[in-house]
Image (cartoon, rainbow, N blue to C red; front, top):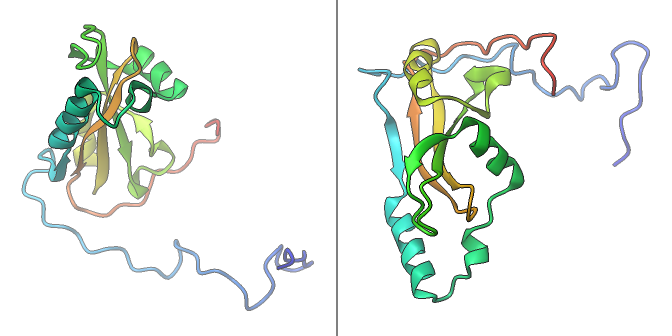
Length: 170
């Protein structure tokens, strides 16, 4: 399909082919009944899968250490500067394992996909209606990484995302 041609009147979209804008004419979602915004809901705890993966790794069956200890360089750098201490690594027994807490959600706007400190989540749960939290453990020595838990926080009241600051770099 050929790229749309520029028109002198409306830009790059030909009349009649407009995609619906999410900001105009859409009905906001209904508020969700939340008793305690700071209490996690829709929790997915992956401890059993983690335990199974570690058992297979230590037994040496069907899993290479390079398959499980393959942290992305950006994840390792984030762990170095933003990680919160989590104890000993289950693979190499090094005491330098950390956890990273990522937040995602439409209501976070340009701040979605960022790493947040665990103590910031309580305040955020009162500022935003709903956002997802992903907790990842990372060992900087052997590069073990695992998504430990996901859950949703927020007070259930839908809000518009904050405006993107002019000085925000992509």
